[in-house]
Length: 341
Image 1 (cartoon, helix red, strand yellow):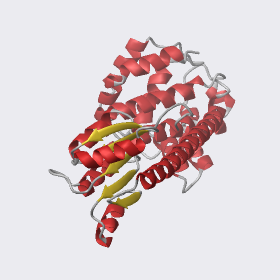
Image 2: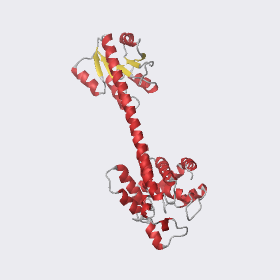
Image 3: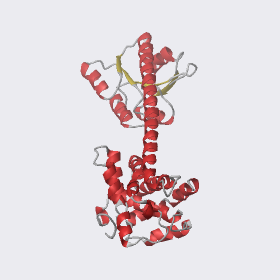
């Protein structure tokens, strides 16, 4: 939104010098004026500098105003800029075409300076209001996302709290999972979803007795059978939800100990039958388990942990996920340094 001292910028797009002069004279005292005589040049200007509103002629060589407007509205970088057609084409179908292309107004020539000034002022005010509302929505959305993540991490830490009071295992696994997902090629929206869902991967440990979680030595067969139930416990606690985040979290909780070869638990899923998010968290979780201190072991050096993870290719882990893990090692190492117990 423009401050009281900042001038809005107006782009005039017209191939006729007289029309440019008329519009420039009407607006130059209040606004910064930019000029283009071709649609292609107009798009280049809009992509290279801030433009607050566009006055666009229809009848131009090479590419007419309607096509120029369509292309501006198809580009995320220029889509929000309001476009006012200023043209001699005054038929109803022309005006309808202009609005269909995404314009906010349609002025027919010959134009009066007072009309142009009034329309530009009105649409700039609406544009500023929309940008303010969008900014407010973005701030509120970011705040809500932060709150959701804090709640998920607190809930996820409930399963880890007794043997990991800082809860940093949860934080690291979330970050590791996001880095691997991005290196795998998933879009940021999916990586962010996994980042949040991974916080609940070990929630089911809340149902495992202390005597087993704290045991400093090797678990016997009965104890090992009990520890394996934490996947199903976590999934059941989260429940069968329609909410995508919780549905994803339940899937991750249930499948993050499945193995690529089919030897994991609890369902003995194999290969691509294991959901991708479960395959990613499996790598992130084991890596953090290796480099972390536990009642039954000392932490491994990072280099040795990486070597061990890679050695489990096609046995425990999806080869493509391991490739993504390798590509993300720089980010993963930075997370490990930042979130050290």
